[in-house]
Amino acid sequence: MALVKWDIDHAHSSVDFTVRHLLVSKVRGRFTKWTGDLQIDEQDLTRSRVDVEIDVTSVDTHEAQRDAHLRSGDFFEVDKHPRIVFKSKRVEEKGKEHLAVTGDLTIRGTTREVVLDVERGGVIAKDPWGKRRAGFTATAKINRKDFGVNFNQVLDQGGLALGEEVAITIELEATAAASATAGVAGAQA
Image (cartoon, rainbow, N blue to C red; front, side):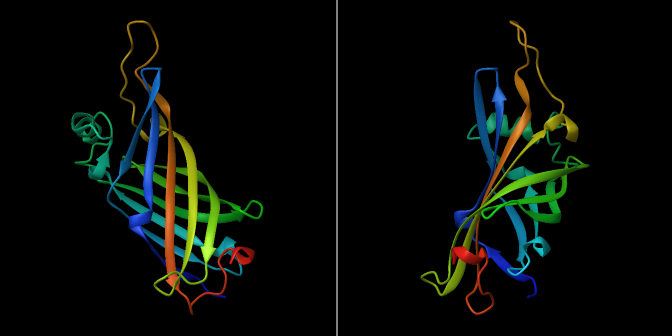
């Protein structure tokens, strides 16, 4: 079977991140503007691919001053690097409900290979609008310094204000024409 393009349902999808703050809590944020290209070969999932492009100016942590700082040269430097890009290179099946999607992640002009741990969610053969619908949750942890995002502050009592590890979570819901596919997740349909 050939690759089939699935349309991302942005109303039910998100790109989120979490980072440790002041050694005591975590700050959560998201990107509100992004696009993706999802193509699935249901007979051979290892041939599938996903590419995501994020508009970094859309960063949203529910705090306008912090968001402006994240857009500055201390962090994302959006004037020079307005996009974060992930391009998959290979997909491996890791059991019935999990995939490992390896790809190149580019942040602030630096590209590193990253592995997304993908949990396959449910699949329905026909949603109320006549389309097949599938869901996926992808997670990864990266070190922001690997991408040139080095800003930090030393705390009076020791330690740093910001953690270096960033947890990424992508919730993805997508649709395809019911006649174009036969069973993305095989036994789940």
